[in-house]
Amino acid sequence: MSEGLVSPHAGTHVPVLVEEVIHALAPVEGAVMVDGTYGGGGYARAALAVANFTLIGIDRDPEAMKRAWEHAGRDPRLIPAPGRFGELEAILHAMGREMVDGIMLDLGVSSFQIDEAERGFSFMRDGPLDMRMERKGPSAADAVNHLTEGELADIFHILGDEHGARRVAREIVHRRRAQPFTTTLDLANVIEKSLGGRRGKPTHPATRSFQALRMWINDESGELVRALGAAERVLKPGGRLVIVTFHSIEDRIVKLFLRSRSGNDPSVSRHVPRAPKGRAPTFEVLQRKAMEPSEAEQDANPRSRSAKLRWALRTDAPAWDAGPDEGFRLPGLKQLEGVA
Ligand SMILES: C[S@@+](CC[C@H](N)C(=O)[O-])C[C@H]1O[C@@H](n2cnc3c(N)ncnc32)[C@H](O)[C@@H]1O
Image 1 (cartoon, rainbow, N blue to C red):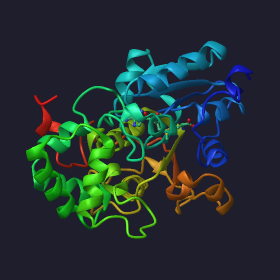
Image 2 (cartoon, rainbow, N blue to C red):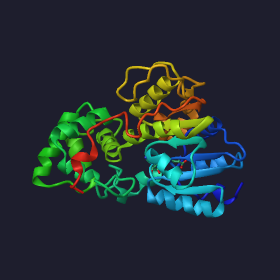
Image 3 (cartoon, protein in one colour):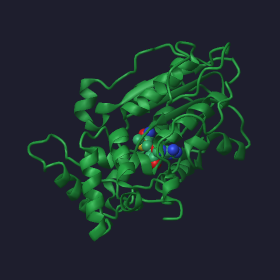
Image 4 (cartoon, protein in one colour):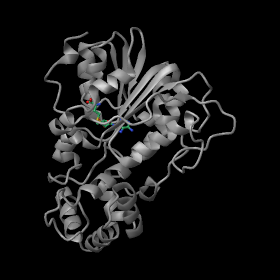
């Protein structure tokens, strides 16, 4: 194990459910594994500490990739690979690889991203209304200044579970006629006002709407669906898929995918492709209930509170050939093409 990779100065993101993730991933000598959400490298360091194997570290955020290159300079077992985990197959092909022994994903944003005002993820810090993990494509400002009231309401309702979604969308559209949105605090204040202020609410009234916008801008659910299909195609028999989610929609997508692919309910969801008749299960789920952080972890790291871990073993059955873009659909980024 390289000293470099276990440096205590490696950053301020506190990884969630680390022991459980590494236990589920079970890296062994000589394996090739993927960390699809490198972030601050917390999982990567923990995994490389338990076995001597190759870890491909993917992240769509150029800042995370800088950290990965720095770490890789100290530990050659880590191979940084910039990109999206939804494009896992293309990333592997470009590296001359086809199959891997394990994949871990730790969804959502890192503390590095949230804490940096200039990235525009946080309603607590004033900054440009950006929220793009990759720093390209349409920004959150483009979304709130150009989508229709109905589209905005759908985003806040579906992705944010915001009960006041319509009110929020109406107020945004009303305000932008006078002056387009450019900053996080400006948007947070308008959302707060539309929901009747704070009035003893435990969380900031903009929490749900900000999360929904971030998920939409980065097509986070679409990325997850594509990653699940890719994982089925690139994992070797016996390979491990380990996913930590922070949002009920994402946990549901993972749960329904694994349920259908393990032969336990080939049905009923628009989130995952239908089971073709007579297909053999491609995953084995040994632990049906999602793992959650202990109370102690939740107290020590409040960000862990909504975390859920699911994992499964790839069988030797052929993949079900879901196309790379099949599955979950929301109002697409298409509405913003040509805007940004
Ligand atoms: C919760 S953090 C991961 C933290 C990491 N496990 C650690 O221990 O430091 C999530 C990371 O995933 C990245 N990410 C989110 N969606 C992605 C995607 N579709 N493809 C690649 N990286 C993604 C984000 O940029 C962020 O750095």
